[in-house]
Length: 172
Image (cartoon, rainbow, N blue to C red; front, side, top):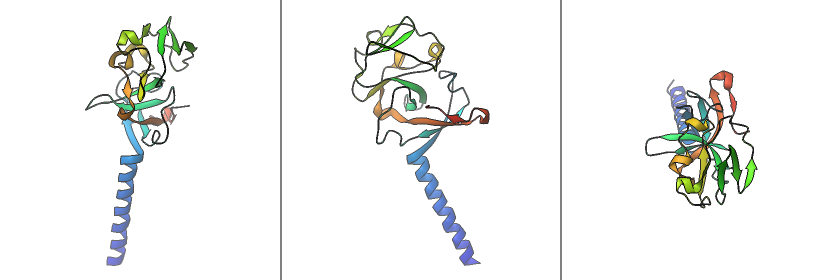
């Protein structure tokens, strides 16, 4: 009886350690609060965050990421500009390095701006990213708060698991 009990205790401890390692270093859970990324993700959606996604690579343009917005809050946004890029919106068109870019994930109009308007210079600095919400008219993002540092990125939003009728990957 004691041998079987000890076996169960060891199994339980191993499972707890594995869960701790996975939750701390590999995957995270994120509950969407707000509508800034609609229609891609909506208020109340639950997502899995891949914390290791950028350990050996850097974010790609249009990745959906979660990052530390401030000391107490994380936000989810879409990467638009990469280090070295010049980003501009003019006549409701995204221009990256003076080339028009299609944005199929948003139907919103975007007010014209350049980095001069947000006080950040002309080119995205090394280690920084320009992020915006898909719901452009209802998003606090790099247009208002500046670039997101590589160090602030929690991970790549990889999978929506709730609600079940919207289950699926986010970065396709």
